[in-house]
Image (cartoon, rainbow, N blue to C red):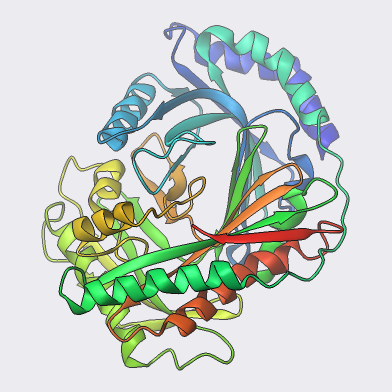
Amino acid sequence: MIHTLLRLLSAPETARRMGELAAGAPASAPLSLRLELPSMTTDWLHLLPAGQPWWYRARPAQGEFRLGIGHALQVASAGNNRFSALDNAFAGFCSDWRRNGPALAFAGFAFAEDNAAPLPNALIAIPALLLECVDGRCSLTLSSPVGSHTQALAAWPTWLAATPATQATAPRPPRPEPLAEQAWMARVVAALRDIANGRIDKVVLTRCRQIEGNVPFSPSDILAALNSQQPGSTVYAYSNGKQTFLGATPERLVRKRGRQIHVDALAGTAWPGSPALADDKNRHEQSLVVSAVVDALAHWCDAPPLIGLPDEHAAGHLRHWRSRISAKARVGSTLFDLVRALHPTPAVGGFPGEAARHWLAAHDERRHGWYSGGIGLLTPEGDGEFSVALRSALIKGKQATLQAGAGIVAGSNPEQELAETEAKLGTLMAALDGVSAGCTQDSRSA
């Protein structure tokens, strides 16, 4: 496949078609040329680059795999107006975007508006090279600013040739972490006390686990393992060329197609050996999410949202309650308007939202990378979809930081909530199995 891609990049016909699209456009405008590739089934993971930013998004069960390499154009933001800033920047991209077919931008953001290390707090980018395989139909989309497309064509072949070498090995069993576990359960007890006193109804507490290997971790191997382990989830990644943030999430934040909106209200967790998913605690937790999503969408919809019946949704060895919520957006509302209204849902923050956020800040809740924020795709037509970035790992060389959380509500049991976070961290640990050799672990609460 790489030989086919290199031939396309060097073909005079490709340069000619890009020149025709660029004619008369401002030098800063985006330019995208979509080229059809031979039909196949591929996840593109063999083409992850070394030293370039890249994005990955897959839905294995649906035969959908996308890899974006490099940035043609990008905008980062932070603070209270981060979503509005990205919305305005993307509208600017779209106003002059020259393209011969479908094109995409990727975007991601952190849970909190002030978390900016090591990834940008919020980022939107048009990938320079977009490889797509959807139901066996494959394509390559080349994008650059109009004024630099000739230089870009000359540089892109070197990106495809630079793929990192990987070594697949196995981690050692994790060490016990009694002090970190006790500290985390003490936070659960503090949350339950404030829930009993009526200060909050729910708060989501997270734990992280530091893993160190004696060889660098391989994002491509981990993503391939997640694709196999959780084909019904959305497998995602963003790399800035040094750190990689990746994971597999069962939860859609919002999808917009035309004026149609679809949101997942997902909460409550069960795993082998846990209490039944249908117990009162899990149902209560899920009902809080449904109520908050409906209230958040009300301002942006022409009519009250429709709530589907809750069902069990599998994510690897875990199961969750999920209700699908649909609505029709008001004319003029954008995907970022909906993201701003919905994030953070009670599934990742708590309820009521503002009180839960204050509680988390007061109790030094830390979330790494874009964990419990969002990652997604947007089209020039204004459509797109964001997923909640759950079950994540932030990787840099031999270091990996895993993170997972649990929703604390009235009736929560601290030891059971700890077991829930262990089950969620286990999904990433299973993906790391066979990837790094001689690992040691230093876990702590975050």
